[in-house]
Image 1: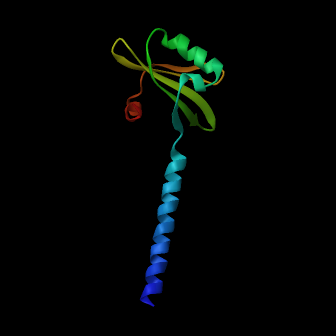
Image 2: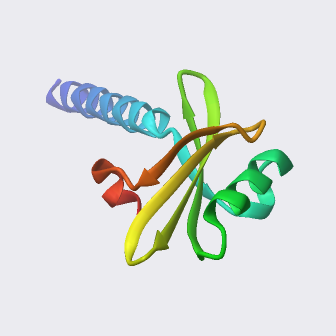
Image 3: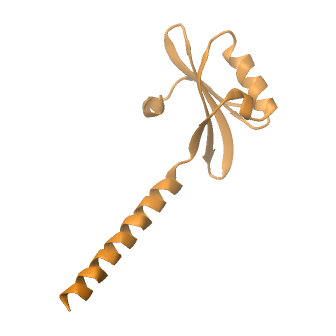
Length: 104
C-alpha cells in the first residue's frame, strides 16, 4: 500500500513540475536573432537608426501578440536600443531600459 501511495505522490509531483516548466517556457517572449533574419523593412530601419555604430544584439520580441524587433548597440560608450515593427516603423529609440540588463 505504501508503494502505491508513494508512486502516486511522485507522479503528481512530476506532473506539477512539468506544468510549471511548460508555463515558464511560454512566458518567454523574445529570442536572439540576426539583422539578416528579420523582415527587410525592419532591418533597413534598424541599420539607418544605428548608423555607423556596431549592433551588439538583435532580438525578435512578442508582446500582446505583436512582433517587434529590438537592436541593442553602443553609442558614445552608452548602451542604446532601437525597437521597430515588421514594417520598419520606429517604436522606441534611446538608452537601453534598465530592466533589459539581463538580456545582454
